[in-house]
Amino acid sequence: MATHPLELSDRVIDSGVVNEPVNRVNSDVWELDDGLAYVENFSHSVVMKAGDALACFDASGAGSGKQVVDAMRTWSPAPVSHLVYTHGHADHIGGSGAFIADAAARGAARPTVVGHENVLARMQRYEDTSDWNMLINRRQFGGIRSEMRAPLTLVHDPTRFLPPDTAKPDQTFDDRLDLRLGDRAVQLHHARGETDDHLWAWVPEKKWMFTGDFVIWNFPNAGNPQKVQRYALEWAHALRAMIAQGPELLVPAHGLPIRGKQRIAGVLGDIAGALEALVRQVLEMMNAGETLDAIIHTVKVPAEVLAKPYLRPLYDEPEFVVRGIWRLYGGWWDGAASRLKPAPDAALGTEIASLAGGADVLIARAKGLAEDGDIRLACHLADFAAWAAPDDPTIHTRRAEIYNKRRDVELSLMSKGIFKAAARESEAVVKRHQP
Image (cartoon, rainbow, N blue to C red):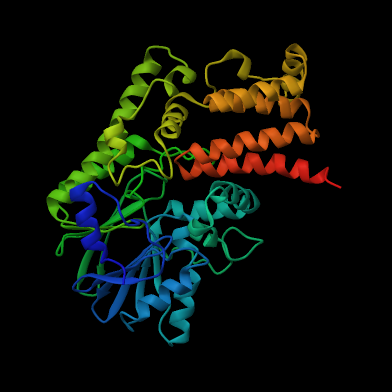
């Protein structure tokens, strides 16, 4: 039997040592307090007894929703009166159809679905960009090892990003919504952070807090390179507002629950402080007229901060958050005049290859740089070579080797996925030329 999540959380936070997985996705159901449980998956679903019914926070993803419901039913047979979305990401709402189907099978009323008003706009955007979102999710999660592939179950219909039975919110709000769920008062607070439709829930009588993705047991996902704008400073402000409530039990949508007022305040304060420091440093350099290139190679998070078990850069990473801060305050242009209206990549690669003496010279130099440890520069030259020789299997064999090496030395899932996708692009070229 796995370690109880609260016991594991206490040990990891207090010792700073991670010797067991902290993001578990096996659909185990755990009771956290009298009348409160959660089901571990991608994402978790928090289940609260509310009189004669249950209130659930997040529905998990399309491929895991039924597993979550089945696990919940081993804890309580009560009907679900409310399903609250902490935000509209697919791994939080895509499993809602399983909750609706469970109610129908039991002859119970359909749960009332609650979310921030911007969830509806997000769902429409997912409908408009379904193929694009499926593409970027495959790329984002495509570089992870087989034992970590649970996130790929986000989509169970190969033709749609959100399944057609995803439930839209019945009740929405703007800034705050006070609910009476059975015998419990629950406050829903909107705050922008990972998304513009995020909320955190507060149960004042019990001092329970459900944070969604404001806490993910990784460095905050505030800079995802393939997704829409995130809000680092407002994320930090939300965490400070949570601390002010004095929670004694915090349940996130990814990672472990946290108990103890002091322990929770310490974790939330560390996350907020890391985000605030990044914003402060980026804005100082922007105000001094620095380019994005200078900023991303200057602004850092101290190693001792990134070593904290709930701030490790294993999903998103500070360099991407820096780019997100620049984009929020400064727009998309990075400050290099040639990149305002750039030449096509193929033309640039061809010209540089010509100057260097050929694409084979470029890729040989890229290979040498990679072997010497300058993998960043090696990737630039490998791309120039591939743009100049898009159908050369020898060039692409070397490029795939370089990007596979890059994938292996990176920490964050996002970097690993994108660099592995680059390797696969070149591997596909090589495969086309095989007899």
